[in-house]
Image (cartoon, rainbow, N blue to C red):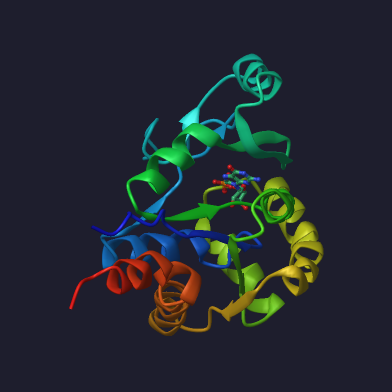
Length: 206
Ligand code: 5GP
C-alpha cells in the first residue's frame, strides 16, 4: 500500500485588484482536491463575508496572543491590519492530501518561501496599471483613501513578482485560470511527488 503523499503548497500573491480572489475561487470549483487555507485577520468583515469561511475574524489582542504562542507560519501587517496563516489549519488540509493555496501578500510569501522552500509561488499580474486602477475603483468595496493607498503599494508588490516561481497575467479570467490549473497539475507529476508510488510499484512481486 502506498503511503499518502501530503499535498503541495501554492503561494498565490498579487497586487489587490488583480482578480486573485476570483481566480482562486474558480480554481477551487474546478479542483475538488485543492483547498484554500483560511487566514486569520483583524480587519472587519466586508458585506457577505462569513467568519470561518472567508477569514477567521479576530481582535488585535487575540491575534497578538497567537503570534506570541508561535501559531502562525507567517503573518504580516497589510494596510494596517494583521493577516496570518496558522500552522494548524494548513497542516490539517495537507495531511488529508489536499493541495493547499495560500492566498497571501508579498510579505507573507517571503516568509513562507524561507520556512517551506518546497512551496511553489505564483504571482498574478494585471495586464497594465491602467486596468488595475480601473478594477480597483469599480470594485466599490473600499474607500477612496484605501484605493489610493493600494494603488501606491501596487508597484512595490509587482516588483516582488521577480522572486516568484511562476507569473500569470490576468488578461482574461478563463485563460489565467487555465494557466494556474496547468501549474497546479504539473506539480503533481514531479518525481519527488511520485516517489511513494514508484517505491510501491517496485515493492510489488511479479
Ligand atoms: P483583503 O483584505 O482584501 O481580503 O486582503 C488584503 C491582502 O491581504 C491581500 O493581498 C491578501 O492576499 C492578503 N492576505 C490575506 N490573508 C493573508 C494571510 O494570511 N497572510 C498574509 N501575509 N497576507 C494575507
